[in-house]
Length: 449
Ligand SMILES: Cc1cc2nc3c(=O)[nH]c(=O)nc-3n(C[C@H](O)[C@H](O)[C@H](O)COP(=O)(O)OP(=O)(O)OC[C@H]3O[C@@H](n4cnc5c(N)ncnc54)[C@H](O)[C@@H]3O)c2cc1C
Image (tube, rainbow, N blue to C red; front, side):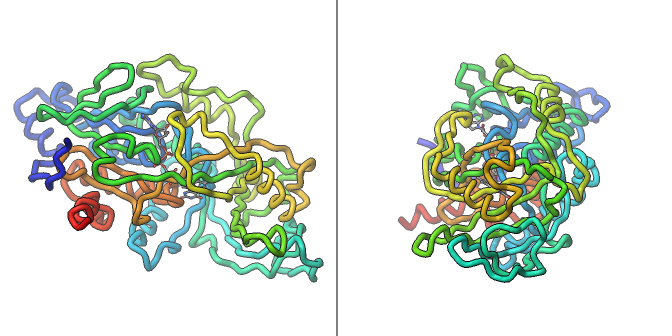
């Protein structure tokens, strides 16, 4: 049985590292190699990658960081998301500060990592409009971008400007961050399936399914919708999966598509349910080479080129105003993710509906006109109270969890990673107040049920 009593105070690991280093010969980073604290981050999605990046940048060599990923970096939601970012859409909720801090961090990360070229970062205008395929064509609103020439469309409403909305290619963003962390700070990526986190005997260890045990001074659990498959997490709270579908199309004249994100309301027939799909033209373009998958690499420590070179080989970022492909997502339902993220299968009816929506938006996106680049599904990680969980697990010292970001994980990854890095290194976060996301809130609720 896992003890769920509140953790007693222990010094944050940076303090432990500097105490240890005073007795040992210092290296260039100021810390003896043997006394460097070891942090293991479980999960190579956007949350794991952001945590590794900020921890490595802030620790400046004082901490040895390893990311353990079961399949491929950003193989699940973090690779298949829309990548839409908004400054103020979470205002008025407990997530507001996390979102605002993240939006600004995305901007500075883009400057640092050449985001427009590396992962398709760009600011854009966001429109909301209703599409009614069953209605008679109405006079076309001059406010509609010219490529939106499909089913009767309402006058668009501008719901985001280039100051308040932006986008990234989520897989390239996640890989670029981890790539930088490995190249600049020696973060290691290990391919393996985390089976459990062992907290017995004072220390911590991450136990992999193949029997390897990776000793650690601190562990971060960032396994997205798979997080509560670890007993340490499921003893406290549950993460459910919301399965959502997406397609990626390459229009015949990509440059005819302007940088406008669309939030649609779409009613296929007068009696059917209203759907709310999203459309994101992207400046990136996937090359027609077979995708080199990290899972083909033999188990063990892997060198960064296995996944970074892959990303560069398959995706070319066009200039910010241009369009390479159009991503369309929607149609979600509660479901249980399969054990293996590679086995998440899209449902044909949902994919068919997304193609129907694409054709209703634009003649450029109609089946037959546009090339189909991807038809896919993935899972949003959701908590019972709809808030992320970020912090130390009560009763499990130096074991942290970061998950439950639902539909805003790509946006909120940077401030989550930066805040968690501060919590681990300094014992508290200044980037953002993590109290609303404290895992201990579930402990209090359990006491009342
Ligand atoms: C259709 C769709 C569109 C979205 N659009 C947006 C958007 O526009 N903007 C936005 O901000 N957010 C968006 N999101 C949400 C966002 O994608 C998620 O919140 C985010 O990707 C979650 O990241 P994560 O790192 O927590 O989880 P994941 O991306 O699921 O990563 C978890 C990782 O853990 C690995 N793993 C699992 N089990 C193990 C194990 N036992 N051992 C080792 N590794 C393991 C998996 O392989 C995976 O790589 C969207 C999501 C969906 C589904």
